[in-house]
Image (cartoon, rainbow, N blue to C red; front, side):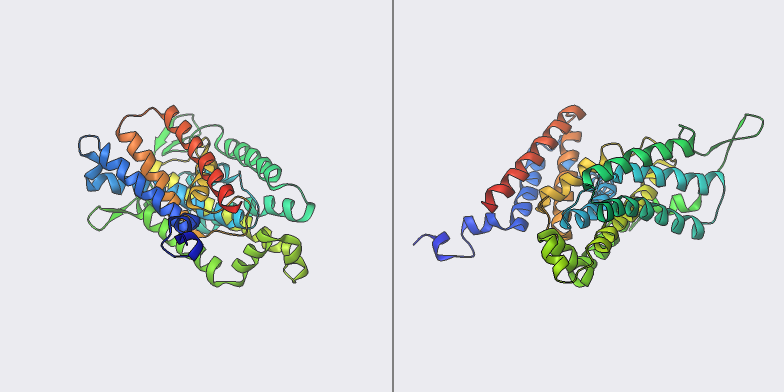
Length: 336
């Protein structure tokens, strides 16, 4: 009998059928690619890995929220626009209005959760497809960000009543979020990403709400007949995604030291790519934060390797699109 017929845990077929194994293999292949195309040794420098984690962290935070929604059988196209909205609001309240961080941070998280919750509510209570509901929120949040900012970046240049600009200091909360610790080898944004991933993992793996998300994604009607409050569970998933998008917006604003209403364009696609490449299927009902972490590292390192080798951004985008299609086809092949 073949290893596949005997059900050996070490057979190639069984190994490849495991989403975690596939995601880990993809990450290893990316690392091998980096070792081969190392840009004259740049890939082996500690700073390269530190910067890779820092750059991937904002996307990773979005991907954690996207994982919650996708497991429930939905999709959230609004996360990039919510990020921009929160970045603008955070900069206005902190830089221009000089509000306390103890007031600003909860308000920003509430703003993100409200935006996500509104999209989730439209989906859950009115039966509108998640694609349409979150697309509408994507457009609305982007427009609101531009309205609040006047179509301009909200920076430390504060316009006065006489039309002149007065430059103010970068708020301490911005410096704290953009700080580096452990001798400059670890970014606080990466720490924030790790904390967000840990909270999301606990909610999915250890909380009743997480089990309900899996149930809804697997079979919504069966979950409803089992007593699951489908509408509220879905709404909370989108609200959580919006709150995590708000956290990403805080990090984005702190890194750029400004609130850009154009920030986050296309970020939702990268977040979806990280979730899918990690092994969480778009059909819902399966997956997890651990898989998303692997997907985040894979996309983050692949983008960094292409960057240090001076591959044009257009080519990087095309390659990412091809990888998403390949990952989805692999999932479909395994289900068949």
